[in-house]
Image (cartoon, rainbow, N blue to C red; front, side):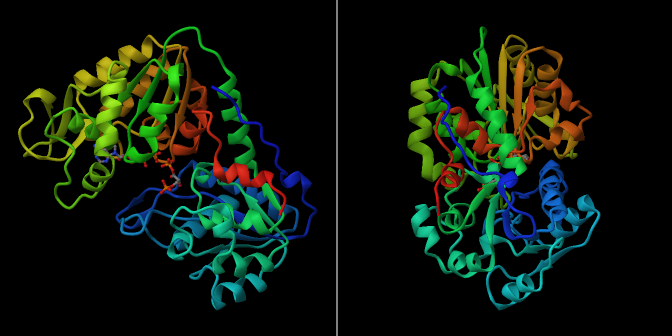
Length: 407
Ligand SMILES: Nc1ncnc2c1ncn2[C@@H]1O[C@H](COP(=O)(O)OP(=O)(O)O)[C@@H](O)[C@H]1O
Ligand SMILES: O=C(OP(=O)(O)O)[C@H](O)COP(=O)(O)O
């Protein structure tokens, strides 16, 4: 792995009493419309507390979910959760750069914090475009003059070339926040480590498009990949099994299959000897119980919600025989304890060995506290998922790279 050298200004370089626009990543699980607190809030609250202490007026930009998903909701609840961590009121305005937002920003005083509405509700935030294009958007051009400085604390979103991440640093004095600094430093140190024994990467969760390039780009650093979750099912489908279909109104598979079928099949044929796919899967039985089925026997389209127990044991054995393990994404729907077995068995195996380990992902890292595992039993628990595995390939993160540039 090669480590890109980055030097950016941090909040140590910022004079006190400024008007600052802070990009954080509090993208969180949403259950029945209720936003779930997780370690991203706790970590970003530390950065914000430090800024408030220095008498800055702090406006906060963030995103939640993706348009069309049921996790695509307002940031109103996020402001309350941040307020709980900070033990002070955090304002919220249901607008990002229109008149209401500008009025709320101009009323903001030193020592006060205000959350602006979900940046992805602005048309110009998405899609991914060059930083110079994002810098010219009305979103960036309207908000930037209201502030003395821009602070990016959202390492976990730094692999996205979105306006709130890459547009503002092109036109403003830009600084890295404490979470950005800490994750960048930890991940750079990880990339410099050398391992004597086998290195295993456990990949799951929902975002195949982030993980397929990683399998191709980590070259010979990773000896084997253990696949589960939606990503694992897409590879099983590429391998000719009847799984990985959207059933009962889900929207995880069909679009990703359409977009990536060829790549999935190519990666499987090129890297097949390093890819471990599930040999059994779990689903909800007719009585609501956990039921399991060997992959070779699958004939019906149903929602598979976890790897099966034989697969979990196989992955746990591979982990026990590893010198380093990198995890991104859950192997099943661990939020439901009937389908947590795959994720928890593998995480427990990692915790029980003395291998070096990194557990990443906003959702996945949450399983550690949910199932009574100790953070201290892992090398590093990252609030970043896709960004940290992309960094392991040695490729820079666009949101970090732009912090290096002068406005
Ligand atoms: N088979 C599955 N079906 C539906 N959801 C799944 C499945 N396996 C894992 N998941 C979900 O994947 C989520 C984590 O995915 P993702 O957002 O990609 O990871 P992270 O946020 O940890 O980077 C978990 O919340 C889990 O419920
Ligand atoms: O949660 C995130 O990434 P992750 O799931 O890889 O940890 C980031 O907030 C990026 O969100 P996105 O993958 O919808 O662009």
